[in-house]
Length: 558
Image (cartoon, rainbow, N blue to C red; front, side):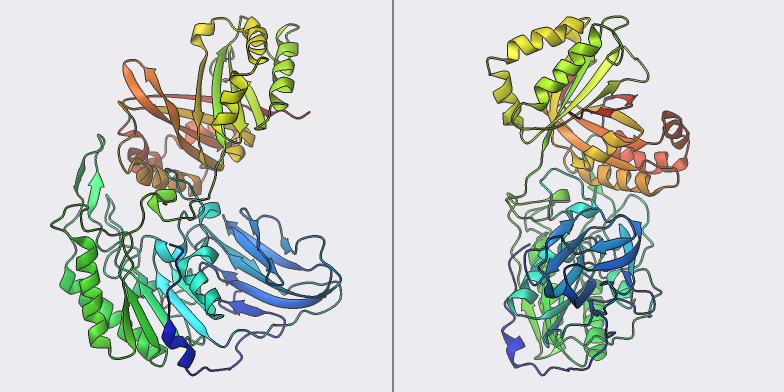
């Protein structure tokens, strides 16, 4: 969601001005000063310096994305934080600058440990923070899950965007400091429904932690907000799972509304006591509707009524905010709401059966034609990258991946006068043009990283008609679990074909999965592990047929 909440009572709230941060920088959000670990969404640091550049020494774990804003200008986005430092953008004028670095992604993806910023031999100072303070407590809605994605897609650290959530925008509009304490999939009494029993902590437990990875009850509540917003309940209401054919079934009973209401009240009372009775805003869920899963569930109304009952018991400083059910035409990864202007590139995936012995690297006829193909296509408007290589399983098959800015650019090339002569020359090294196959896919995840891995696995999953509803929820969970496992793939990307494809009588839109591996042998060894069986059902079980092969891609460079 992107619409700010109007918290009109904030203007009259008394404010504490106690300083709680080191002199060299100021913490943004909830950061444990003993570790300087950025875990919570939108947590970070702010500092001032004089000069033309500054850097922050870091150590990273997992996947992390950040925003860097200098002097209040549009942030520079780093969707993959690597290396041992974060530097300010080049080209700053020599003078005094204020820097804010905020984490876009949530704790489940990774952490950033930082040290004092460096500016030549000079020291940095901590800017004075806003006097107004707001804390937002929630789940994926508050995290910014998939906010930068285009549906259908799978969520990644790069697609999360906590600094663009309703919470961050509300704080900005009110010139307030803010903290986000949120974790995707979490609830008040139970978390998002899963096929196996979920024993992980709920949000009230996580809220007591300083850093998201710290022990329960480790937080000292030194950050005292005058406003607290609680947006929870979406995951408590979830109960449907989906079988291999896409059919839904009850994975657990519907939520016990009385238990939810009592637990939310207890949690809100705890928040009140720890934060010296702040103004409290409790919200309905924009991801719940009154017609799904059934009209009898009336999930949005039922959850809203439970929240209203809690607000009524909390007293005059508690308020109810009704978020209407989201616009389904503006959804991101995993159906989370996003900016409608988000865009993604399109990948053309083509497989060519070459004539016997026509190795594109060294054959006297094939090599010049492959080079001609790359040179010609790289000059076509809209082409952003070319990757190609032979299948390891069958070296007579040449795989070409062309990255287009959009599919229409490829269609325009096909309609041009140069296309037929180009295709005729390319087909001169093809064994059987009837066996050439090509599709277009909007991959979600880091497709370029999978192509740039030492070996890329390409798995095509075939469905009658297409993948079932909510297929990508299970697929995302599977890919994330595999990539985090020991000896798992380094990167992954997933997408649905634009076109219907056919494989042994199964026809419809297919799903193509690309995984980056160190070697084919690593993949084969990984397949023997239990984690493949544990999570693979969400990705594989509903497909009718599937094919898998490996390619060592080379990127074409002029």
